[in-house]
Image (cartoon, rainbow, N blue to C red):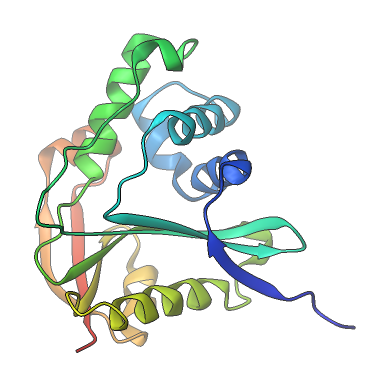
Length: 206
């Protein structure tokens, strides 16, 4: 039986809903701890967020596609000469979620945000659909990020954070030549997400 090919392509607005579903698959525990939004509401929140947040020239989201279906996604960001503040859409574009839920979501997203240093390409998220895990799709997405860094003269390393409660993920990244550079604790992260400890991991490429 021939397996349909998997391609890695830039994000397009037509994929916003599917990417929202992937993010909920990957991070529902964090955001449902933070808010009272159910899966469908969280998907719609991310879909509207993608619809209304202007593209940042110092970031890129890619999708893994198989037969037109988004089965994985990765988002990266890097430092530029003129740092831009993270922009969230106006309240009116996110009607229906409740202002308290929106406030907590924006605080949570800001807390999870990381400002890359010179030469650093930060992996904001990488998610593979549960039905397609264990098939090497995560490796394909990480390889795309590595190729991106190696093609950019100003970048020399990949970085990411792994939750302390997920040692298997840390071991996986270690097998991919990421090294744990430091471990951090955050009372605010514990308060919002029940995730106090995080590992900051780096893979040097040049």
